[in-house]
Length: 322
Image (cartoon, rainbow, N blue to C red; front, side):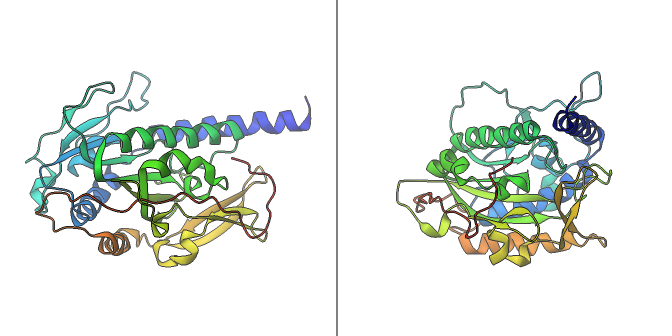
């Protein structure tokens, strides 16, 4: 076996171990903590109370209700069963996160009577570093497929909040955003620290709270384009320029380290776990910037569209590696 083949095999084994560790670790507490912050943002952006909400990915019922006692179903081997669920957009009173609004199952291929007003999702495998190129490519592709399907299911002007691995925004080939850029506006993001969702050692990758809006109409707005990515020769990493211009939305101290396999990995350190107290302000700034209505008014449409512009890093990096 060649050195390259052996390295690939070892990385694949490391990925399997990380995937298993993440799948069996519990994130319901963190998702329950995030839910009211997400709904405060969505109501501030104009989501109508009682409107239709779609949730999928990890702990969709917890994200819909804020109730940690609605854990995700698991199969006989203990792995989570990913499915889609729907429920009403909750009100602002704390009790409405728990029992007031029922959550009903939303089959994957159900023909919808009318579009959803909002979509929320915690994407699978968002808080682990993957080493093999194939695994990283699969995770990135899965996000774009699921996010596009969710945006397609929204009414024009509807909003989506996704918890995603940092590599989604940090991926250097901006053409991957082309399909989403046809239908969605980028409103902003906040970067959560390592171990924000799960405390296990494998779940040490930063993740982003990504805020998008389903476009209504075809008028481009350069202020709402998906952000560029820059190459840092000092760190050997690609990173989104969004967090260069909004450093306050990185909820921890940025760091770069070399792992056991010699790969550079991004980390965001928050040893005192301050992110839950800082995230509402970061999301509030995004909401304030893009507010179109009060929380008790129906969702307003007619927002400007973005034009997707592909630009290149100022310094030419090595060929993109997922």
